Every structure is written in structure tokens, then in C-alpha cells.
Image (cartoon, rainbow, N blue to C red):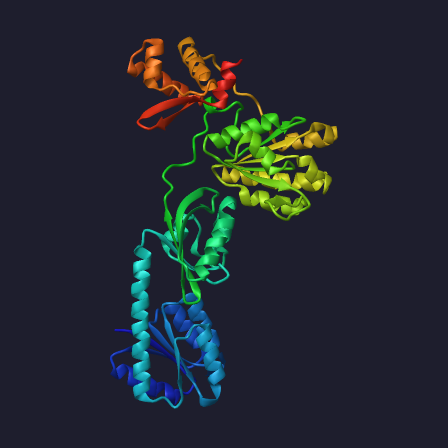
Length: 470
């Protein structure tokens, strides 16, 4: 039996409506005031509410607002006089389903109630299906703000429903995917459904790889997210790195040029972390020497064209905070340039906040600074908020592995890549021994194996090349 609430301060009208609806086998509650109606809505769940807009102790709009915010499963029908058409339209915009003009025609009333309950049944069915979806689903308005999500959506992103509703969807997207995601949203608004892959940042700073689709329905955009994250953040091991690195730490590198800082940063990116480098250098120069598998943000007062960051400490701090997430390393080159455009005290205060957030989100931050640009006291204060970058203590590579590494290096230097059979013949060892030695070198980050047709070929890494030349 459907449960109805009728709100009207006209006691005679209220009794008539109650009798009509009870005769149709509805369970009917009545309220003669705004206060009484709100109390009933707090204590009971209703399928439909008939609400008179003009009440002696207030407005029916307050009741509609309460239902929309606290009991959206309740369908609202508005009761209004002939002179209140504008008010009825306002009620519809607030979320009411329909309005009935007084005096109420019994047949029109029952049909309106029936249609309202049918709408609720369809809505309940749709919500049931949505809740059972394995994919995350969100409804966005045309500005990209989240109006609704299913449980899977906010659970996979580790948010609460209340924290997500009203949030901009783009604020959930990883920095390097924000531009492309915005472009896909524009295309979707042109009634061209979009499907693409992007990284989302969870509330706790972890990252989620998702297949995202955008589809426009009426004045809303339907966003569906499938979580395709198959592995956790790459494990950082000493064998893969030149320097000691731990997640959640801010490291300070004191050097005139950022050689050690860049080496550490690139090794972490090669190990599988997402990387963002903030620098005064031109991106093309950085990519030419260090590769292009990380994001480069240029510190400059000219913020047109490429990806840039204005050196104002407030903008700087907010951008850094947006980048902090698990599985991510950030290199900040030329921190002294930011200090020169602000004050040391403000930069230090921002750095303290970054340090706390990096720890909470298990991010890695590397600061490179020329110590000649700071006073002894300033450098000391920076050192207290950071950790020094220290080299990993190495054990010598055993002789048979060193010989194999040297062979691969020489072959690579002349433009060839040896395969397993080449190594077998060169060292007169079995296939299983080849496999064992290659696995050991690969685990230490000294070589990589790549498939060339049906064969696997061996290529030395930059780290392996350095070892063979020491």
C-alpha cells in the first residue's frame, strides 16, 4: 500500500482529500501546517506528498526543499489557487512533479496521483539498476558539476556521496589528463558520445585508471567510469634506483645544476611512477636530454602557450597540492626562482603544507636548489623540513653477470640487440642459465627485454650502461 502525505491548512479540504485517497486504498497521513508536515517527513517515508503552497505558518516551498534534499524518493504534487501559476512554475523548477489547481477535480486528482506513483516506481527501478552496476555512474550538469552518483562511483574514488555532489568532475582528473578530458566533454555536449582512458585521483591520493564515457541526456551529462586499474603502485626497490627514495618524503638536493635530482626523478618515472617536473628550462630542451614520458611545467611569468605556472607562491602551492598523489613523483627545479618572486618565509610555509600532504598521500617530492642563492639560516630551515638525497649503498655485481652485461652493452653500442640464442652461444651456457641471469639483471634495472617478432632481444638501460663504464 502506497503511503501519501497531504498538507493543507484548510481542515475541510484536508478531510475531503483524505477520504478520496483512502477510498482508493492509499495509506494517508495529513498535516495542517508546515511544522507538522516537516515532522511527518522526518519520522516517515512517503511515496507521494500533496502540498498546498500557502500555509498559515509558512510556505509549501520549504516542504518541497526538504523533500528534494532529504527524501528525493518522495514525489511532490503541488496544490495551488488560480492566482498562483507563477508559484507553481517555481515549485516545478524546485523539483515538484506536477501541480493541481483548486478547486480539485476528483478524477484529475486521482490520475495525477497515479502518474506520480508510476514515476516513482520507474525511478526506483532505475535507481535499483544503477546501484547494481559494476561501473561508477555520475550525472553532471552542463558546467561539469556532479549532481548525482551511484554507490560504486563514490566508493571506487574513496569519497562519501555528500563530498562528491557539487564537486567539479575535472577536479578529480589527474593533471596530465585534465586538458584532454575537458575536450571530450566539449565534444559530448555536441551530442557526440565520447569514450576514453584517463587517470582519476581518489580522495586519499591514490590513482585510478578508468575508461570514461560521456553521453548527453537532455540538459545533463551521463558519466560512466570503469576501473581498469590492474596493479597497485609500482614497488620502488633499491636495485632500481641510484638514490635512497621512500614514498611520502620531500627530498632536498643542493647542487648548482639539477643533475642528481633529474637522475633520481627519471629513474622513478622509468620505474613506473607518474612524473611532473616544474622548471625554468624550456620543455623541448628537457625532453631532448631526458625523454618525454613525464609532464613538464615551465615556471614563467608569461603564462600563454605551453603548460606553465606563474611563480607566485599562492598559485605555486595550489598547483603542487593538486599534483600530490600516490604513484607520483614531482621535481621542483629552481625553487630559488619562486623565492625571488615572493619571500622565503611564505615559500617555507607553503613547503611545510606540501610536506604534510606528501606524507598523507604517499607522494615523492624532489626539490633542487642552488645553495649559493640562500643564506646559511634559510638553507638550514629548508633542511629541517626535508630529507637529503643519499646514494644507495651498492653491492658488486658478480663476475658472470658483469660479463653478460658488458656483452649486451657492446652489442647495443654498435646498433644490435642480442637475443637468448646469441647469449647461449657466446657463453656456452644452457637456455635455463640464460634465463636465470637475464632475470637477475632485469630485476636490478640493468637491462630490459623487448619482443622483436617471435624473439626476445636484450637492451641495456642507462643505469646498466653507467655500471659497465665505471
